[in-house]
Amino acid sequence: MKKQKKIYIVDVTNRDGVQTSRLGLAKLQKTMINIYLNEMGVYQSEFGFPVTRHETNYLNANLELARIGALKPIILSGWVRAIREDVEKACKLTKVENLNLSISTSDQMINGKFMGKFSKEDVISEMTEAVDTAKRLGIKLIGVNAEDASRTDLDYLIKFSRAAKKRGAARIRYCDTLGYDDPFTIYERVKLLAEEVKLPIELHCHNDLGMVVAVSLAGAKAAIDAGVDAYINTTVNGMGERAGNADLVSVILAIKYSSGFKGRYVLDEHVKLSRAWKIAKYASYAFGVPIPINQPGVGANAFAHESGIHADGALKDRRNYELYDYEELGRGEPEIIETGRQITAGEYSGIKGFRNVYEKLEIKFKNEKEATNILDLVRYANVHTQQPLIEDELRFIAKYPDIAKKIFTMAP
Ligand SMILES: [Zn+2]
Image (cartoon, rainbow, N blue to C red; front, side, top):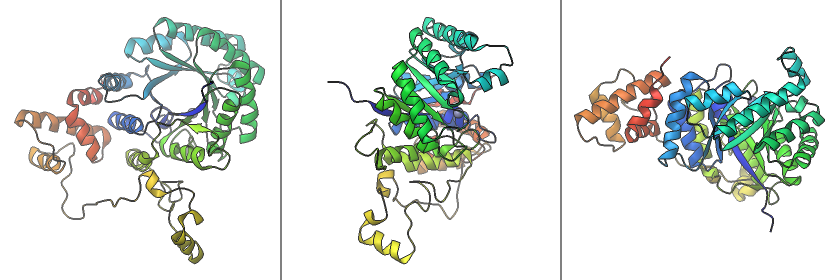
């Protein structure tokens, strides 16, 4: 029997999310996002930039977490330009095993960005050389990204994708880089692309016209209708370039509960929506960007009813006014907020206050030396995050001090 085609999630918060203007995450926060994505059962995290020097220790430390089983089974993949030099440098600086290789394919960008440096043929040969290099250097999963695919001549995109497949690429990432597609155009284009190339398709979409979740789903539907797997690129809370990317929780909800997808299109069964609340809250804290009150699933008003008819209806039967349950998203537990004295751990904390913070977490240290060592790391962590560490971050540092130390270390 033919295996049923599915929709998988590739989260790009740690790549698109952090490259965004005015948004950034400390390396510890990026690590926590990887850990939460893994706990949530997300298939893959595009966890950073292997040719960017300040990422090196963070990337290698996270790969080490994967090796010791603390970040498993999530696939960690890096993002580089589809040129030989970048692939070589990525493999030299890091132990990265999976790479996405990206190059622009639209006439607009080939003319407007490369300014005559590359012709359309050159773009294909640069890309195939990069794929060959990745293969030679032992990269396991090679994805090829067509930047600005939605404004790319479709015949050329098919030719480009066939060349990538021939060299051993496992997937084609269709990038709607400017959020130009609508659900109908992306469906038609991706369907044809997938039928012609017969490779799994990644949908990387942006929200410039406010349609990003719908466009991502329409692209996924096209891939599956054409007989290949679909991979939707998401970010936590939709953080990403300009108007952002497809919000992770919204995408999951839309696949599970929209009228045309529910029961027909299958989401990777490992995804646990029950972690939605936790990861959305964490990303909001780490980015310093509040969750909008009307955000699907995780916004403060997502399950709030006030008007007479709605409140009465929701109380009689939740299905009157709710498509899905708040409990399913991990909501509903009361949150304990300390309103009296608080001792927080920061970059200038001393050993006594710090002991108090860890005692509350019921974490004990073997001796003074270990306590001092962890305190030192917590101070460094705070230098990076510039806000009080949350419990999971404190636990992480106490559990993996050596790896945490690497994450905090950046040598220019
Ligand atoms: Zn993007």
